Amino acid sequence: MKLRLLEDSNGLLVKILYLSCDPYKKFRMTKPYVLVYVEPFRPGSPLTGYGVARVLESGHPNFKKGDLLWGFTGQEEYPLLNAPETCFKIEDANLPPSYYTGLLGMPGMTAYAGFFEVCSPKKGETVFISEASGAVGQLVGQFAKLFGCYVVGSASSKEKVDLLKNKSGFDDAFNYKEELDLDAALKRCFPEGIDIYFENVGGKMLDAVLLSMKLHGRIAVCGMISQYNLEQPEGIHNLTNFILKRIRMEGFVVTDYYHLYPKFLEMVLPQIKEGKIVYVEDTPEGLENAPTALIGLFYGCNVGKQVVVVSHI
Ligand code: NDP
Image 1 (cartoon, rainbow, N blue to C red):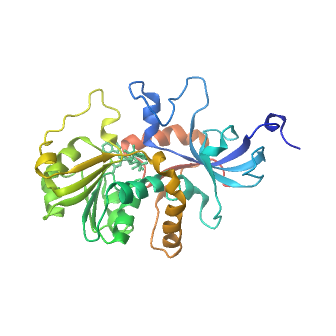
Image 2: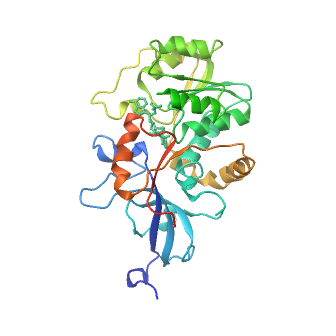
Image 3: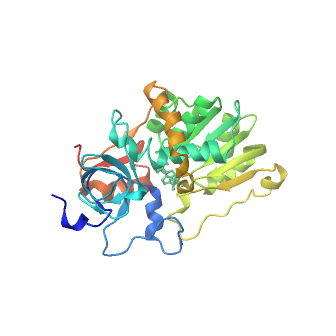
């Protein structure tokens, strides 16, 4: 028997399995950011965000009891989803469902759209990725390597740098916290300069990168996490490089590219199955650990994609 709440509605009652922790949630708590693609959190209302869930009851023709889905869900154990159009059915149940919070979900699409659609890469080009060991960065690097680029990433610890070099297959990586001179570190890794910068952090790193960009370089602005918690954003001093080097810099939001999701899966699923892509996840258990996990993103506590395991089945 269907829940009365779902009768005459398109809604779903779901059980959350995995919750995604994402830096953009900070925007939803901060008033000055007027968002056109996601609403701010409302005090007194349940939090929402990306998750993976199993359908318990369905009033929607596209979903049936037992289906797995990923998308915008409640950050609860048993949310009612009133707009399941924002969710994708998980058709391939042979991969870990948690991947749909990262590799096969929003961060995977972000890496794919940002690299292939915004950066216009060419084989043999040099690519730098900041915040490289996280949910998005580790994938940008692997997509770029498989495409035939030279790839370097930065991260905040030896453990993360080792992961980039030894597990994610980056050509090189450095610990940006240990480098006193970021400009010198970038010149060491890119003696000929950078063709593509995948920007995740902003601030001092962006300023240093501008000095190493090549003529006609491209910068995809995915995020600027170093600025999210500052009262005043840091100034950028090397802006004239945009003119001198004819650099193109373009911001993007992943939701504008969701129509490419089938094309993305067509590319990435075989790569995963052939072992060409590896994905590192950080998976604390229990909904009660979600706040700590979210805050930890801004201290670099996560190693890989930050997921919270709410239930395994
Ligand atoms: P991550 O999994 O990379 O987690 C956050 C990481 O940010 C931390 O582990 C830490 O890495 C780094 N970090 C935290 N604080 C700072 C700081 N002050 N300065 C420099 N680095 C910091 O996050 P995601 O992969 O999910 O997101 C990556 C970026 O992409 C973010 O900027 C996010 O906002 C953006 N994004 C944009 C989207 C879009 O549509 N445009 C969609 C999804 C994400 P470390 O320890 O190495 O410093």
